[in-house]
Image: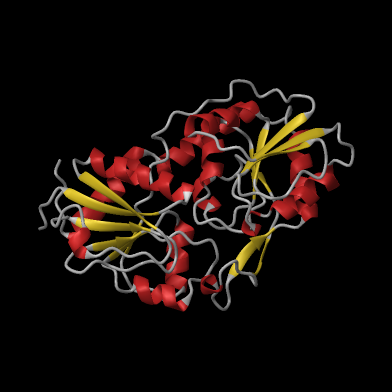
Length: 344
């Protein structure tokens, strides 16, 4: 039995969602009595054993971008891969096969690892998503015009081209609704119409978490998510959520408690980085027409459906899977099966 109380957490540098999820894992580990050292690594960066803050860790957690996984000799190494498509590149699987264990942030990630041929033990140690305060929606009476919200980086995988086309298809008149897209300063495209707002300014975490409740519904047209953190935040804030149920979304959502966008599983033929490609990769594609139909269905049924009750059921389901208590139980199981003793 390993009896050490210090953990090393390696996090992808400059990637906001990775920093947030690593912070959740830090707090999870600390809740069981571990002390956590965190280091940030950029793409292609490695760390030498002689440059570690300490030399005595119970295990090392690698929450890094794909292709940047290199286990540290002499330690028990855990990888936390988050990938959006249905296959991992062969080189990534080769890297991950050198690890002692994997933490899967969603069932989709577990399934993708198995489908990709990885033989390393996979544990469902999910990040606890209930550790930050979030402004809650208090009234489910739709504003006029109806207000949609979406959050994400300006990357093709997020499906912004599909969402914009769908919104314009659903609402040919610019007085019928409003769409606000919160993206980052890296975004270099502009709004196609006055009722579509593109927010590029940098928000603090409290600012971001405080905005969800200002809107009537949250929408994502993403082609694939390993987890889907903004969707989880919208559910926590009590918003009706308009999404498909492919990929990481499936672990976050309760059937009947969201507005489902129809989708097809299709070949994923494009990559922003060649190393990210694998033969037979799939994604969850929703056409602009399918997205437009879901946007309209949510708006039309807003008064008829009891979204207050549905939002409570959706949030309760989310936290039964991604709450601190569930995460502590999963971490405890991992520790026991790996022969590691928790400090408390």
